[in-house]
Image (cartoon, rainbow, N blue to C red; front, side, top):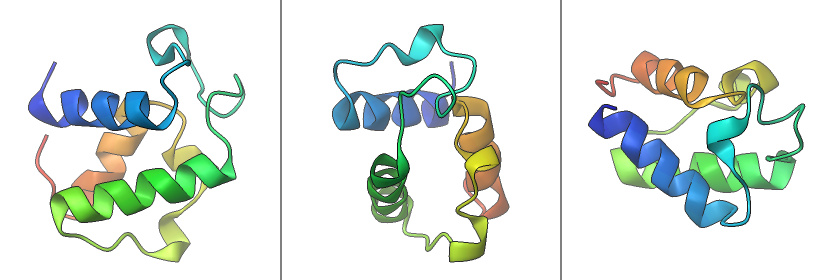
Length: 80
C-alpha cells in the first residue's frame, strides 16, 4: 500500500469509523459514503494536499474506491 492509499484509508476511517471499506467494491453502491461524506472527504483531501478539487470533478465515479480517489488526486498532481 502506498502512502497515498494509506492516507485515503485513514481519512475514510475518520469519516466513517463504523464502515469496513476494505470489503467494498463500490463505496457508494454499498452505502458506505453519501453526498455529505464526499463533501467532507473532498475538504479533507484539499486540506491535506493543498489542492482544490473542482466541482466538476466531484462525480460519483471518482469516489467508488481508494483507487478511483487516488486517480482523481493524480489529476491534481498528487503522486501515488
